[in-house]
Image (cartoon, rainbow, N blue to C red; front, side, top):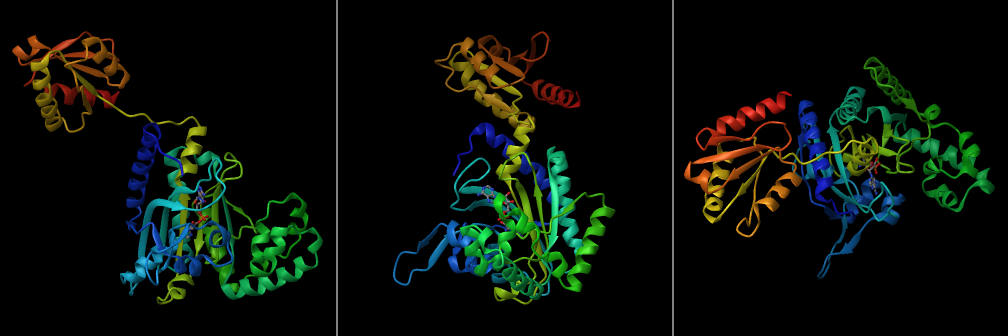
Length: 422
Ligand code: HAM
């Protein structure tokens, strides 16, 4: 469960800003739900025989008699559906929602895989057509462009068909793999009866040729799902989105049907999926609501930021001014002046040197420089007498100037505007 230090937090903030702007432009609304729920919710939604539920949940018993089993959320879709049902958000209504926050999975940590990680999830309820599937892809593509990682990610898609078609396919698959038992590893043998589709996901090199010859899911899906998939692919092409159909993409959560997709990169080793999702038309019904077509995805923020770092993209705190003072009187005046600047120059980022009674002028300047500030504002006894302030340009080749307190806000606002324009 990694800490996020200040020099990383700035990259998170930059990412969140870009995200917020983008998702509002598509008309989605945010919802927030607790980091834990009853374990039963996750078991029913994600599926009993999945890695997440079998091995990865942080689960504990609530204290007291009849205490319930509670789990830290391993993902957000189940909680989001629970929230909608509990508050009646799906009564004859469509919803376009998103959420962000930490998720918890007890996996072996490695680069790009953590036990506490952060997802942004998007869920659309009440839209049956492939147009909304496409919208989700288009908004993620726009995000990769804004983040500067578009060139390093690839879209993989598949269709799992209806749950009936999937059931029939499952039987076919069990029959096929039963004829090749000698090639299957222990993990896959365990999955054979419980969740045979997941065998298609195996990375074991010894099993690849058997997997390649397995019956194809796409060929087994129902007519309606085929049409949905064709329309989805056509709309992607119409909008200039490149994609690869990966017939072995089955996803590790049981609630999916029809469209599934993953945005993947080669640059993060085994943790290549940065964003994944699909349709889950049966989940709302299964959790006690009225049958509601649903589709969504979630992206792993840590993986996206890692990808940006690998491409050499970093973010830095942006400081405009640093106020240094000489002597006790100037320091007291300095605090008032700093507040006046904050009132009158709303975009000016100013650090007020604290503790200047004991810090020399030189050491204050060193701190000003280290802070990244572009301007040092200097307040000594003479300046206080004159109700003025000295301005030293720390990053520009310009002579120091003096401005009265009265002139200062207009000067700083204009200076800042020039900085932005250049
Ligand atoms: P998921 O594929 O389990 O789907 O997770 C989505 C994304 O979360 C992954 O593609 C990855 O980027 C990130 N992620 C997952 N596990 C970890 C980890 N241990 N460390 C770092 N990042 C991780 C879901 O969670 C579904 N709820 C997505 C969805 C929403 N489907 C429909 N709606």
